[in-house]
Amino acid sequence: MKKMFMKYPFVIILLIVFMTNSLNSQPLLDTIMLSEMQSKNVLILSSKDSLIKFYGTPIFVSYNRRFYISKEWNTPTKEQDTVFYFNILSYHNNRMSYFEKDGRIRLSYFDLKKNKKAVIHTSKLQLSYHLSLEELMKIYNYTFKDIAGLQLGIMAPYPMRKCRCFYQVDFSTGEHESVNIELYFDCKKKLRFLNIDAYDF
Image (cartoon, rainbow, N blue to C red; front, side, top):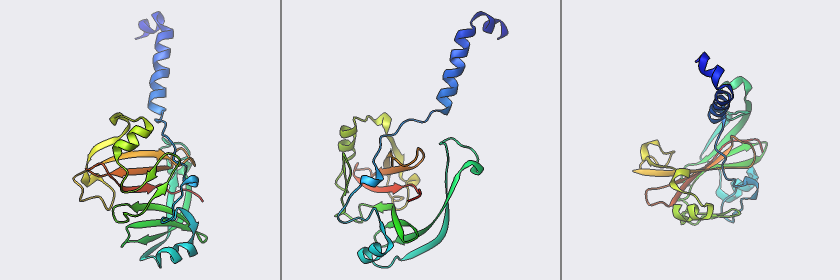
């Protein structure tokens, strides 16, 4: 190895730099700005009072839940993370949940099959149960290399555990490099479920 390094020092240094960057780089995600998402029948960012007027009293409330946000996507220790505390307001009948802090709410997860009339508008898409995976792939010029799937349903988030399989497509919220919107499509390639990571709001 020493003889090789003496003979090809520049090439070996380039290889080391390339391998290090490959290990430390995260694929860049397209962005769906959470602040720009709009809907007439789904609250995205709003007040707790508006939420209760819209959907009624939450079925379940969990207080002071802790969430860690890594300063960098590959940060290994929680000591370097930012910590947020939110209440969780859940509506099990509608299969949706919200983060709540100081009277403000932020959408956490939402089941589009349970709420088939729901439509969320973004800059490029209308997120609804009618959105197909093929339509999303066409709009963003994706191939199946850009999508996590076909995956077994047992690995899917609640309430998709009974699905035989699912596809997952992730987007950034535009807030922080480790805060994403995850879109889950069922075996029929229809948008079934969305999950939004916790972050300060």
